[in-house]
Every structure is written in structure tokens, then in C-alpha cells.
Length: 316
Ligand code: UDP
Ligand code: MG
Image (cartoon, rainbow, N blue to C red; front, side, top):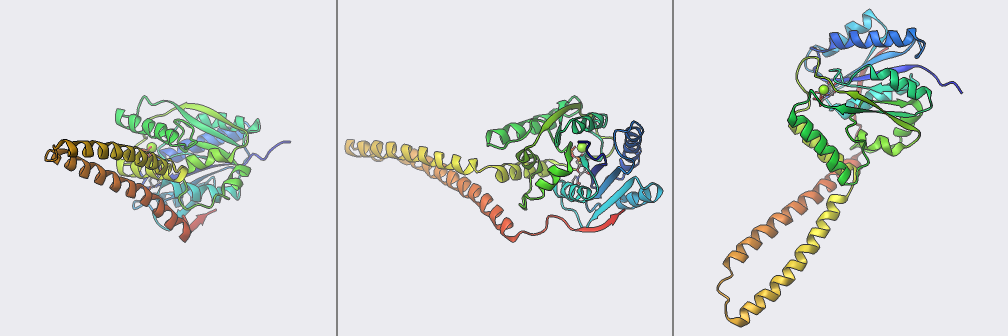
């Protein structure tokens, strides 16, 4: 059965005025060449999601939309972060599109991979993951932290595709299934593989940002990592349990040792071990409470079920 061919590109933008002119131009060229080749339908669109930018990003999206209807826009009521902006865009695009590709506004992800994404969709894939084959242009720090993040996630039991960020194609059907994941702490990279269906991978090289600075400073990356791990697995809590057991065994050994020392009459030499235990156990307890607190915080946020984003305006 022939599947629908309307493609929507979803591009979250936060303070991206520096890259938007170039990005919009390149994406439009890409879309037009695909339309000419008959790979995608004529009413395919580029959907920019303005994530509460403080610069002229939204005005630029409005201007683009006025000039050419291929550009569409969604304005969130305020900054909600990349994941939520992306979700807002995906859910909006889902209403009109047969397939949706998400990508960053800085075009670090090679847009020539889009052809392959669409080909795989034609072959029946519901989800196609873009995977970075090389990170030649990333700084050592970015590469190290990012790859460490995927490894840690995997170790903690998160089912993520290594070196795949949010550059992917999803069919309408996959998006409809994703909508059923109603959690507030939505970590897309971890949720998408849970959906299943026929999937495939497209490899591409990651480029440098077109212009401007990264909107993902270390602080946001750390928050994403912690959210990712705690929303995908409870392994950290289990690790604490094992740690607790280990400490318990140690304490029994210490008890035996102390009693032996007591009966041998060496009781005054206890200071070092005492101080060390106080600090070690105290630190461990704080850490354990902190990890458990992370999860309680998550439960707290989930029970409130607040909306993940609010759409203020839609340009169609
Ligand atoms: N972004 C967003 N909201 C935010 C932060 C970032 O929508 O609060 C967007 C940003 O405009 C870009 C994408 O998320 O399109 C990825 O950000 P960036 O390229 O700065 O991250 P990096 O590639 O450095 O990890
Ligand atoms: Mg980037």
C-alpha cells in the first residue's frame, strides 16, 4: 500500500536569529528538490517552533511565513526547553503530516540525510534514527561528555540508540503511539525506542553550528542527563540497595574487629576509624537520600500532570 507523502520538518528554535536566514533557505531548497523528485508531497512544510526566544526569532518566522507558505510556525507561550519545544512541534505536525523529521535549527545535522530518511520511510519504516558517524567538529569536551552520557544511560538500563540525538523521522502512526506516553518528564530519546515498529538507522556526519552559540551549556546537559537516567530506569535506587548491603557487611566486620580490640585492651586507638566512618557513612546517606529524592521529585511532578507546553500561536 502506498503511504502518504506529506513531510513536515520540525525545527525547535531558541534565540536562533543568527542562523534562521541561512537555515530557512537551505531547508527550503532541500524540500523543493524532494518535491521535484516526487519523493514528498507538494504540501510538505517546514515548521519552526519558537521556544520563548528573547530575540527576533519569532518575528523572523512570521516574516518567512508571509513570504512563503512552506514555512509554518508554532509559538510556545514561554521557554520550555528543547525537549518540550520539540514535542510541541511534533504533536502539531502530526495533525497534518504523514511523516515528520525533527532537526536542530543550527543545521549541525547533515540535511542531506533527509533523502535517506524518506527512502527508508518508503520502504516501510515507522521510525528512522539519525546517528552521528563522526564528531570531527565537536570539541573534545562535547564529544567526551556526550558519548559518556550515552554509555552511562545504557549502563543504567536506558534503551537508547548510541550517538543518536533528536534527528529522526517518525511516521504519523509512530507519533500517534508516542502521544500515549503521557509522562511529564518526557525524555524523547528514551521513549522513542520503546515504541517499536520497523525502524532503521541513517548515518551522517555532524557539522559545526552555522552561527551563534550552543543553547545547551553544561548545566542544561547535566540536567538532561539526570532527567534521562531517572525517567528511564530505577537502577540508581537499586545501586543504593547494593551499596547499603555492602556497608552492612563492612559494619559487621568492624563490629567483630572492635570487640576483639576491646578484649585485647587496645580501645583507645579508635579515633581514625571513628572519624572515617562518620564521614563515609554520612556522605553515603546524603547521597542515597538525594537519589531517592530525585525520584520522589519526579513522582511529585508526575502527579500534578501539568501541561508540558502551551501553544500561544500557530501560523498556517
Ligand atoms: N533549543 C530550544 N530550547 C532551549 C534550548 C535549545 O528549542 O531551551 C533548541 C535550539 O534552538 C536548537 C536545538 O534546541 O535548535 C539544539 O540546541 P543547540 O544546537 O544549541 O545544542 P547543541 O547542538 O550545542 O547540543
Ligand atoms: Mg547544535
